[in-house]
Each structure stands twice: as C-alpha cells, then as structure tokens.
Image 1 (cartoon, rainbow, N blue to C red):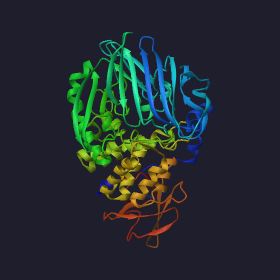
Image 2 (image 1 turned 135 degrees about the vertical axis):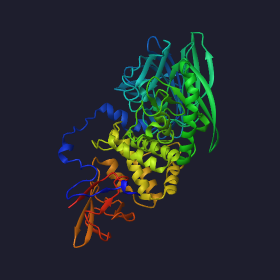
Image 3 (image 1 turned 180 degrees about the vertical axis):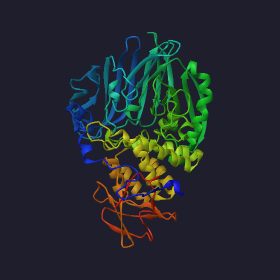
Length: 556
C-alpha cells in the first residue's frame, strides 16, 4: 500500500475521515410511525405462515387504453399446519371479484391491502391444495418508477404503447394477488399476459406459448422453473423485437435473449453483447454460476432506468456507459461500463438467488450488489481501480439512519445500504486479507443459500465462520447503527495506546497502520484502552489506512 492510501493524523483532536454523527443531529430525525396496514403487510402472522407456496399461475389481460387489468392467480400451496383461514394481499384499489376453491366461491373480508379467506373445513397439515383469486381494476400508476412504482403507461417514439411494471418495496400486490412477503417464494410459476394484438409481452422465464385470442388480444405464456420473489414478477409490453446470443458459462450453455424496441434494434445488437458477456464472466468468477440457467438471461427495454426482475432484467440507461451519463464515484472508472447492466444483473445473485426474508434486510440485496460494481472493475481493470471506485462512492453516504430497517412493517433501512454497504464489504475483504478466501466466501454464500431466503444472522454468521473471525461486531456497527466507529490514539511515555469509540458494546476491528512509511501491520483495538505495539509511533508519523477503512481517527 503506497502513501496515498493512508491519511496522516496531523493534529490533536482531529478526525481523519468524517466527524461522528452527534447526538443532537440524531435527535432531529423524526422516528417513523407505523400503522396496522404496515403490520398486516410486513408481519408473518399465523394466517400467512399456515401455508407454503408451491406454484402460481398468474393469468392477466391488460387493457392499455383503459389502464385496466383483469384476470386471476392460482395459488397452489402446502398446509404447514391445520388451518381454515388464510391471508393473501392485493391493493385495496383493485377488486377481488371472487375466490374459488374446489369449484365453489369462498367468503372473504378485506382490511387495507390484506384479504382474509375462510375455508369451509380445516385444511390439514401436509395437504397440497389450491385456490384461485379472480380480480380486476385500475392498478396504481407509477409516479417515478422504479422507486415510486406500479404500472408505467407510456409510448415509444413511434407512438406505440409501451407498458411495464416495477414494484420493489411497494409490493407485487400493487398489481396482482399473492402472499406479498419476501420470506415465501413459489417454487415455479406460469405467467400468462394478454395484450392487444401487434404488441408483445416479455415476462420472466422462458416463452413457451403464444396464442392469438378471438378478442383481438395475444396471450404470452412464460414459464419460470426456478423459485422467484414476488417483486421480480414483471410484465413488459411494447413493439419488441428479439435477438439471441449464448454464453458458455460454468454450468454450460446459458441462453441470452434481448428484447428491445424496434427503434433500438441496431444499437442494441452492438451494445448488449459486449457488455453482458464481460458481466457474466466477472460475476461467475466472484459469485459462482449464474443462478437461473433453466430460465435463461434476458435484457428488456423498459420505460424507466432499470430493475433486477429475475431472468428478465429491465434496461433504460440509454445504451451508454455510466449511470445516466455520470459516474457515482467521480473517479472515471464508473464511465467504462454500463451501470444498469452490471448493477441490476448483479442482483441475480444477491436479491434473486439470495433474497432477504424481510424488507428490513434489503441491505443484503443492495450492499452486495453495490459492491459488485467494484468487483466488476477489479476483474476487468485491476484491483487498484476497483478500490478507487469503492472509495469514491463514499461521497454518497449520508449516515442519516441505520442501514437495516425495522422488522415486521415492510420497511427498508437507509439508502446508505448502497454506498455504505459496499464500503463495509470492501473493509471485510481488507480485514480477511486474502482475496481468494474472500472470493470463496462470496461464492459459498450463493451456493449455500442457493434459491433461498435469508436474514441478517444467516449472512453475517456465514461470513464470520468462513473468515474464521468473529465479524459480528463489525457488521452490527455499520448495519444496525448510524455512526461510524472512531479509532482513538494516545501517546504516553514512549508508548502508544488505542481504543475504538463505537455503539456496539463488544466492538473490535483489526485495522491497518504503519509508522514512518514503514511496513503495513494490523492492530486490533477494542473499546478499552490498550497498548499497541508500534515502536517509535507518534502523532506526526502514525498513518492509518482510511482509504480502505471507513472510520474516524482521533488523537489526544
């Protein structure tokens, strides 16, 4: 590590990186207020845990002129306990026309966006059963997709309809009935979308059938063979053309499909392959095989910036490098690749393959995928470039609230889950100090939790176990608290003492330092003052690695 990777401690009571967030600053932030509607959506009550989803068949007709949808969703489930009542979810502005069970309509009630269905007899534990929900209405129109989501109704440059869905966070129940909780993913799914003749729907999985209907609509049937989270289920409707490619990956031949507006065909044929192949090579190197070979990999033109819809990544970045023409790191490295292709595809591993059980742990999706951007640069341009990028994105960190949100109310944490989470993971790599070991940890996460839902403990405990080091205090400080830790030094009688100032009671973290431009060495302070072995160190010659560590540094 050269001298540019360190920040010298220059004066007494100086902080090298950022000041700690003071108590007065924290007090001005209003605490969120949660409602019963939030709990109904975010809490796993017995009415939701009593059944385990196995299969959906979503069959929907989309009337674009009226911005109206109608259709049904078949729920196939296994009873996890005896029950005679369950909850599913559908936004209140959409009408539940009927719920059919064994050919008969069932009574149901609604409360906010939750629907409660009563069965005539108890469904016994272990029984595989099904019901079909018929519904209709005008779905919520997105104000600013994908962040403020719903349906997007617009037109392409030729005046033809261009329609898409985007509902992460907001919830899939904004447009179709389902158990809208990330903890329960169906094992497989059939998505049938009917659209006006002359248009094409592109959804997740593989197109298995196209049917011209007598009512002037065309039905597209897409089969998803792998487990899928609800918010990834998508409809993309437009005047699409289709071209293919193949990637020879770790599990063999991966089919690549590109669905683009007719007007974009020529530039897409040049732009997509040269960006997608390097991305897949990079992420298979770092994370292991692409998780959905059976369902293929698709890029789909979308009328918004982009989303990680499983096996149907949506794209709206203008066929240009960077993110909307800029580099979040201000280093120049972010302008050498297309942000949306890299970032949203990174979610195929973290977000779609590994999905957080609760929205509070959305950091698992976004922190690892933010970090994947640095790893993409690392693999293609070298480690120094990747480190420069991850250091550069610190400028976006707000330290406004914890990265982890509250459980049970369908609320994610601070937007710092992107840059602060990415910086944290780079610190973990630095602490482990063995890049191959770190790569195997990332690959092991995707193998161990393949097609599974996880929580905070699953991820942190796995990394700690395979790093052979207790990293729980480090994750807890950066994920569950707003403040970053500060490393404090004292010099007395020719000796050096150090401690961490942190929120976590048992916080400790090894950190790289050096004296007089000498060799790097790790010291391992905790929250109590302890002597550290740094012969000859003083406030004028002690350097702390604040390039790879996102910390404050304080000297008395």
